[in-house]
Image (cartoon, rainbow, N blue to C red):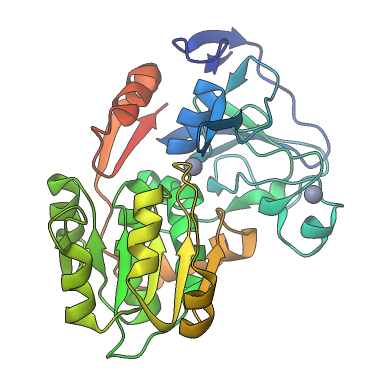
Length: 351
Ligand SMILES: [Zn+2]
Ligand SMILES: [Zn+2]
């Protein structure tokens, strides 16, 4: 039987459901879930709406997928069964699942950006059933990646929080030794960003977060400094100490986090916005021009980027993101904890 914890009604406790194991067809693969991370996007989908800021709400990231839906898109597991046309994976192999599955035919999909699909999306745990379950049916074997000797719980977090941080840092690229990098927001994704920053940009980041526990964790993961953005004169002090940062990543995405990160940029600086807290920004166009700054959005990442991240994680000793294990049966309680902001690092469910 397949056991899963599903959103049956938005905002209500997840419902345990049992159904017969699906039989993989074509190149589909049935994966026995070992680990599944609990992510902030799960919260948006569970609540059923996404806050755009300014009082505007839209239906969650999945455009209101039909319920019931099994959440969970940070999945590692072992191959349980393969469809008749699957040739590259074998039963028993441990794999990380790339969850950002697109239609395969729309313009972004044709460019290899399935995570930006504008067609009939099949992202696991977002549009179709995901990993808060004993098993997950993956639509194609090409979405299953080797994790080598990586810890399966840590590797699971690479499918979303790690990939999101990786893709944002990749947009920044290598920095010079005298440049500064600012990371705003040290939740699960932001901390993965802190852990990856040195290896990817050459610079230990300055981290801004409201929560002292998250600032402390950021320092442990290699941040050069961790500051409270709400402290008196925090932005002024930062500007004075750095002459403005060359790059900033806003992992929160609120009005205040955006303003702080944007305000910290030096001339020709680059802000990558990642967080989905739902703020609205007003840009001073003249200043934007005079400072020649850039603002880019970055949403999760591509299959190629996830492969690159797995290679990087195996070649480089990255500081490990703190992980709290929880049984699959505690999926709902884990969501509630995350909503309350009580999670430092990542909760990873064990199926
Ligand atoms: Zn996620
Ligand atoms: Zn598509």
